[in-house]
Length: 203
Length: 353
Image: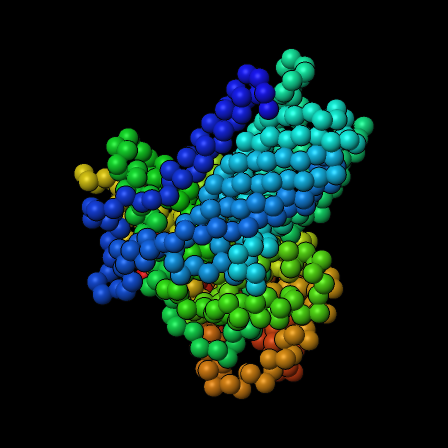
């Protein structure tokens, strides 16, 4: 990646992704301290405060992600990466967990490769694997992405670099990605914007 | 051209996957003869905690809000696509006892639950995870009912309110809203996606309508504005809202297409468990508490019109050769028509029981 437009595009993409992530995080922590605006019957257990204290005992987790998809312009691609999150200590994601946090994806395909950094939110489970999110049942992601094409790319020149933002959604384990990219690097045409997309399995 | 072909391929994949997306299923038979501790207090505390958090946020903002705005803030607090946050919390927290419990049991459940029995991994019903069973006030149900309660109940309430605004009488508006919910369950949430139409889901939807409607009920709203800000005057309490109609081992699903052929032999495995003292006691208690609910009144209408098969044929009683139970209209539950025996949104408010 060389030249001003590429750097600017990447900076814009990262700012957008971080902004989305910040917005997603902003709704999480409930305010504490004052009496609750919900009355509690005497003698109930657990109380609101006990539940909050229980759930505030969190640990940081890193889960591996995977995705295989038909991709335009890179044809068939496989992605792997990870998501970093915090969850209550007793949450065992063998079955469905809500996992939200920063993500990193590396992608290798028949006609290209790429790297994406962003934020993801999904309901998934590890099954027996313990750390690999084998099933992503529903989720979305926003990423700043950089990709390079190789020989055979669909409707894109060989050896071209693209930087952009990508949105991803997964439902019932089916994944969709959709991104807007700018051709960057030495020799890139002025204002060459492309829409790339893909569909497959995973997150 | 290549892009067009790929886009068409993606659209086809979406069309295939879409019906299964919202079909969450559960299996109370797996937990049939196992002990469960009451989860009511923990779930109430979690839901009240989230409501309190929403109200604290609204109050801290200091802006003028209508009750509907506050209700929306509460709804947003619960919302996540398909899986609502109360369900996800209940499924994971150690504060709630559930079946399956623990990693090994969860993996076994995934392999052996009703829709894993003699089905292919390509079966759409297996593309989404099965929900564990919990118990509240002596009633067993899948955690998916919490998503139905908060999500579908909110949609039903929107429809109900919209019809009331158009001048439709309240009882009729409720009937039409519940009927829309039945249509949804017969299509995207069950029937056409998984071949499973859950009557228990319909009941949870209806109770969810009561909850959401009661928050801003003009006569006696549960949400009230005070000098200190918005407060919930009656805390959320799940116990009076659940009923035997939430338990899919009692309130059977209506199976469509070939699904019943696969489910029937699974149910037959539990005939022996009907003699288990805890199972027998629970079923006796259910028979005593069973009523003719408004959602059952709607389903009865569909049955009378021949639009769905009789659910009584899908009970474990039928599979095990016991006398058929009238699922929709149990003995002693009052007249079939016109009014259901159970109270409706007109006279029920959350927390008032």
